[in-house]
Length: 126
Figure (cartoon, rainbow, N blue to C red):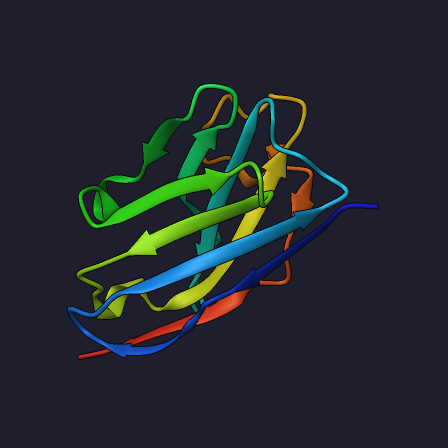
Protein backbone atom coordinates (compact mmCIF):
# COMPACT_ATOMS: atom_id res chain seq x y z
CA UNK A 1 0.00 0.00 0.00
CA UNK A 2 1.30 3.42 -0.96
CA UNK A 3 1.54 6.25 1.54
CA UNK A 4 2.77 9.76 0.88
CA UNK A 5 3.16 11.94 3.96
CA UNK A 6 3.91 15.64 3.65
CA UNK A 7 5.50 17.77 6.35
CA UNK A 8 7.21 21.12 6.72
CA UNK A 9 4.31 23.47 6.20
CA UNK A 10 3.71 26.43 8.46
CA UNK A 11 3.15 30.15 8.71
CA UNK A 12 5.77 32.60 7.46
CA UNK A 13 5.95 36.23 6.48
CA UNK A 14 6.33 37.31 2.88
CA UNK A 15 9.90 36.88 1.72
CA UNK A 16 10.46 33.92 4.00
CA UNK A 17 11.32 30.32 3.19
CA UNK A 18 10.00 26.85 3.90
CA UNK A 19 11.04 23.36 2.88
CA UNK A 20 8.34 20.79 2.37
CA UNK A 21 9.07 17.08 2.56
CA UNK A 22 7.10 14.12 1.27
CA UNK A 23 8.06 10.74 2.69
CA UNK A 24 6.97 7.84 0.53
CA UNK A 25 6.34 4.27 1.56
CA UNK A 26 5.23 1.45 -0.69
CA UNK A 27 6.32 3.53 -3.66
CA UNK A 28 9.76 4.31 -5.01
CA UNK A 29 10.14 7.00 -7.58
CA UNK A 30 12.85 5.43 -9.67
CA UNK A 31 10.89 5.92 -12.82
CA UNK A 32 8.43 8.48 -14.10
CA UNK A 33 7.13 11.40 -12.12
CA UNK A 34 6.39 12.95 -8.78
CA UNK A 35 5.11 16.41 -8.16
CA UNK A 36 3.87 19.09 -5.84
CA UNK A 37 0.41 20.57 -6.21
CA UNK A 38 -1.40 23.19 -4.20
CA UNK A 39 -4.95 24.27 -3.56
CA UNK A 40 -5.95 27.65 -2.21
CA UNK A 41 -9.39 28.28 -0.70
CA UNK A 42 -12.01 28.59 -3.40
CA UNK A 43 -9.58 27.64 -6.15
CA UNK A 44 -8.85 24.51 -8.12
CA UNK A 45 -5.84 22.37 -7.36
CA UNK A 46 -2.88 23.46 -9.48
CA UNK A 47 0.45 21.88 -10.23
CA UNK A 48 3.49 23.69 -8.88
CA UNK A 49 6.51 21.56 -9.76
CA UNK A 50 7.20 18.08 -11.05
CA UNK A 51 10.28 15.93 -11.37
CA UNK A 52 11.16 13.07 -13.69
CA UNK A 53 12.71 10.73 -11.18
CA UNK A 54 14.85 8.74 -13.60
CA UNK A 55 16.78 11.76 -14.88
CA UNK A 56 16.01 14.48 -12.37
CA UNK A 57 14.42 16.74 -14.97
CA UNK A 58 12.24 19.36 -13.34
CA UNK A 59 9.28 21.45 -14.42
CA UNK A 60 7.73 24.51 -12.78
CA UNK A 61 4.78 26.78 -13.26
CA UNK A 62 5.84 30.28 -14.21
CA UNK A 63 4.75 31.86 -10.95
CA UNK A 64 7.25 29.84 -8.88
CA UNK A 65 10.22 29.67 -11.23
CA UNK A 66 13.41 30.95 -9.61
CA UNK A 67 11.73 30.75 -6.18
CA UNK A 68 10.89 27.06 -5.70
CA UNK A 69 13.10 24.01 -6.18
CA UNK A 70 11.86 20.43 -6.36
CA UNK A 71 14.26 17.63 -5.55
CA UNK A 72 14.30 14.05 -4.31
CA UNK A 73 16.52 11.89 -2.16
CA UNK A 74 16.28 8.36 -3.45
CA UNK A 75 18.09 6.90 -0.46
CA UNK A 76 15.48 8.38 1.87
CA UNK A 77 12.64 7.92 -0.60
CA UNK A 78 11.67 11.52 0.05
CA UNK A 79 10.55 14.35 -2.21
CA UNK A 80 11.27 17.97 -1.30
CA UNK A 81 10.05 21.41 -2.27
CA UNK A 82 12.32 24.24 -1.22
CA UNK A 83 10.33 27.47 -1.29
CA UNK A 84 11.91 30.89 -0.96
CA UNK A 85 10.81 34.49 -1.47
CA UNK A 86 7.35 33.36 -0.48
CA UNK A 87 4.38 35.56 -1.37
CA UNK A 88 0.89 35.75 0.13
CA UNK A 89 -0.46 34.23 -3.08
CA UNK A 90 1.54 31.08 -2.31
CA UNK A 91 -0.82 30.41 0.59
CA UNK A 92 -2.45 27.02 0.04
CA UNK A 93 -2.51 23.40 1.08
CA UNK A 94 0.41 21.68 -0.63
CA UNK A 95 0.15 18.07 -1.76
CA UNK A 96 2.72 15.69 -3.11
CA UNK A 97 1.69 13.26 -5.79
CA UNK A 98 3.09 10.25 -7.61
CA UNK A 99 2.65 9.12 -11.19
CA UNK A 100 4.09 5.61 -11.47
CA UNK A 101 2.87 5.05 -15.02
CA UNK A 102 4.33 8.10 -16.67
CA UNK A 103 1.03 9.13 -18.19
CA UNK A 104 1.38 12.66 -16.84
CA UNK A 105 4.49 13.32 -18.88
CA UNK A 106 5.51 15.64 -16.08
CA UNK A 107 2.71 18.04 -16.76
CA UNK A 108 0.36 19.47 -14.17
CA UNK A 109 -2.78 17.47 -14.87
CA UNK A 110 -3.70 16.24 -11.41
CA UNK A 111 -5.96 13.55 -12.85
CA UNK A 112 -2.90 11.72 -14.19
CA UNK A 113 -1.35 11.23 -10.76
CA UNK A 114 -2.38 8.09 -8.90
CA UNK A 115 -0.97 8.68 -5.44
CA UNK A 116 -1.59 11.63 -3.14
CA UNK A 117 -0.59 12.73 0.32
CA UNK A 118 -2.91 14.35 2.82
CA UNK A 119 -1.45 17.83 2.34
CA UNK A 120 0.35 20.38 4.46
CA UNK A 121 -0.78 23.96 5.03
CA UNK A 122 1.42 26.86 3.96
CA UNK A 123 0.34 30.34 5.04
CA UNK A 124 2.23 33.44 3.95
CA UNK A 125 1.33 36.73 5.59
CA UNK A 126 2.02 40.15 4.01
